[in-house]
Image 1 (cartoon, one colour):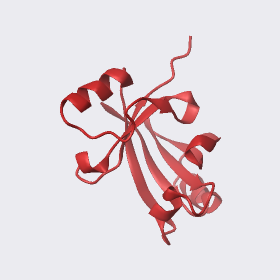
Image 2: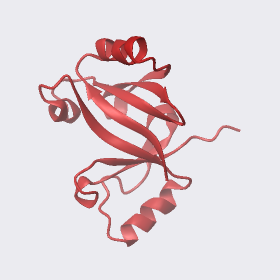
Image 3: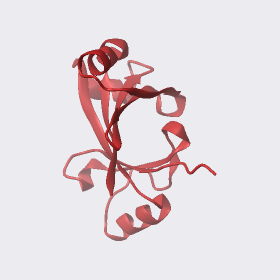
Image 4: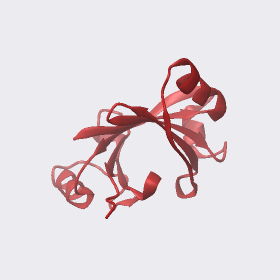
Length: 134
């Protein structure tokens, strides 16, 4: 599996975006609101992967509570897979606890599923199957 993205939840999206683009020189590659997940996401090119800045749409949401009082906090790592349904089945067969038993839509219409941190030494892990364009 290759790294798809590293997600960071932020309190001030514009200020954090300025740090990454103006100071650190990252290129913004997408920006979208993902209402189903309650976030606005901005992607920054990081080689073959990306850094994803996440701003909670509601400060009382679980992702905002996760961030707490911090300006930003690492939220999850995401790995690219070819066949998400097969990957979920294989993980479950090996006793891995899933948050998402079935794929759901994420940014760019990609299919995603999260692995429960209890199965990954405390780290929230997302699996991503990129949308294939004809």
